[in-house]
Amino acid sequence: MKNTLDVLFRYLPLRICFAVNSLPSEVLEKANEIRIRRNAPISVTCGNRNILFDEKGNVCNVHKAICATDNEIADCMSKLTSGSLYTCDEYVASGYIPLAEGGRAGVCGRANPRGGFAEINSINLRLHRFLPDVAKSLVERLNRDGLCGVLVCSPPAMGKTTFLRSAAYLLSSGKGIQPTRVGVADERGEIAAGIDKSGLLDVISSMPKSEAINLLTRTMSPQIIICDEIGGNEAEAIIEAQNTGVSLIASAHCETPQKLLLRGRMKLLLERDLFRLCVILGYDGGYTCEIAETEGLL
Image (tube, rainbow, N blue to C red; front, side):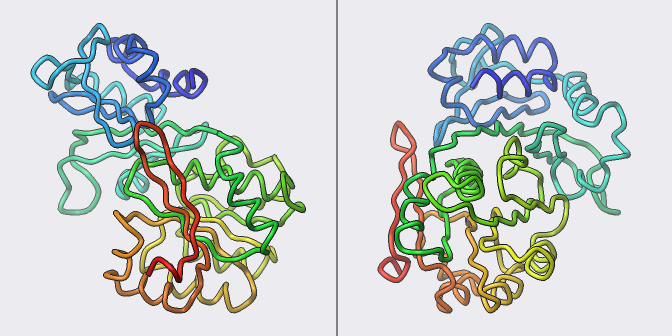
């Protein structure tokens, strides 16, 4: 965990860095996001909990919480963009900044009518972890029953990307299964962070997922394609890939798998039986994982 935090500390203003580093160890061990807000409380996300703290790292209420100043927001943005904000304009307009080590910082604020943001007011630094065995139960099932489409479901900040990273690593490096050709459509540079040299892994980053899925299918003959956070825009590319015999492991934000049926194109993908298995991630004082046949859930 410390190694992951060390990466993010280089992007934090000194005062905020000290406060975060002073948090109780049980918070740091479970943290997956650091959220910085202009003249408003800074928080750390732990599963479904939002932790507020003061300048000394003491957990506190909203009235005593440390807040980021205008200068600290500017300092953080300068660090994230290596002092050249204009070179990241295209990413910022899409609401994020890719990190050199992999992963991303989400941003939002006052929108510019001509596109992008006129002012950044919130920065969300996401901690990417490499937990190699978190998807072990899924890979064991795929080894036993054969490769198939898998949908990883949960509300935001429940470890979907960490799960996908583990699956990509285990499949491509042959841990618990024969080495598998894995293509990763890594639009925001998060899934393959730290594992891109680990096995039979071919990665397309910084490209819209639908285009990356099409390109991987046509040119790299993957056995499995892995991507994060699918929505309606990727439906056609996913169906086309499935028609060529390529299975997809993907994630989707949802409170429950059943609620995906309320979203038109997601309903289409589910009704076409493109995802035979559903992985349901949750948090109950610790992260939980359930694997089920999709047909039995919907």
